[in-house]
Image (cartoon, rainbow, N blue to C red):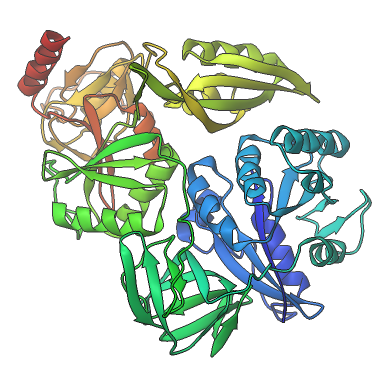
Length: 601
């Protein structure tokens, strides 16, 4: 059968998953009266809540008797590891670009990976129905990006389609048409058929699936030869060669899989029957096994300490609370999450987890929390390298689009955090700013940026390189209010303390000694009693018994908590609660630790 393998790549929110929806509808994957909803491929709860793609997924459609394997990829820079490994399965890429925003940091990153693999690109300029869009300027900017990334002559001669995924049309001219048929015809015309070299079986595992009935499932593209059900094969790993046998074979069909007796070269399939394998291993011929180069993924840039929950409320919510549970779960995650690394520490109860950024690590913590784990996570640290005897840290390119009258506030905020401006240009009514900033400077920047720009700023960032250490970067300026005792908070106490700070707890919530219950209005921490009830007397005085007026608590998401906490603080995460606390709950221990740190300094 005629086959095309395409990956859809783009910056976050440029419309990849919506385009996949349109392809599925156009090729009649669903019945005419079937209710499908939107963002069909984002099936995970977390993806639907956040409105972003986290895991890459496969679907397959048939158009004009040609099978098109479609790979939907994440758009957020923190999940770049997902994109890097699945591009190996594709022969062409659809690069989606927003008709107003143009190429963004992640567009550059994923395109660079695709060009290095010599994939055939098709450029799709999406959202041309938006007001103040500029498709022609964006087309020029995309061409310039290709040129800067050293694209070949052939790659520079890319076809371009314009349209609106939301309204369901794409065309090679910027004119509205019926549907996305011109784009599907373009995929058949421009994306080459898989190149099949001569030789024995080779299939590189680039993705992992898990089924409660079948166990672990290996997914990859058959590069050469063919694979049959019941066939013995060699599994080429980094540590040697193991013999195994194919139990069952599946190919992708629509949104599901179909069992088949044989898969020929060029198609993407799922193999059942392997137990001990990792992404990057090669399924090869039993007699003459030849391995393929392992998929290389960029290094992590941030680390966090994961440890067991040792707060007074330990074990109240979660099912999995021991260090063995925690270690097994983290090790299981590293098998399919290539950009993640886990290291043991001196303490048996703690593990150092390395990832691409706060969102990458935050999604892992949120997933574990929903599975019933209780844990404590420390504040994020950037990974520092010593190059030529000097301390180097990761730098990122930060892109901010903001209304012109607010651009001064953004520049001021970023320069305080050691950022240097590279580009400043107008895009319609918006100001487009680009900065070179240490990764440390990005921690906690988003919430400050949104506050200072009334929520108007749109920011995105991407890792660029390691550069010399930039010195001290100011963190949080205000201290916190810490609970003095373990009890339920009272409205009476919170009312009296409201002028001291903004509270993270409501009256009637259980708190413990050492828990952070509010943000102080000044620098420096303060231990307060928020659990004192009102003394009841039989005296009444006018005005003293007015109902207390308490402002609602400030709700912080998990990522906001990660950005908020300082070195001596951590987050207790349980299935029902996210609480910030001091590492040392006892006040005397905190003072001793501060003295020790000052002595060392």
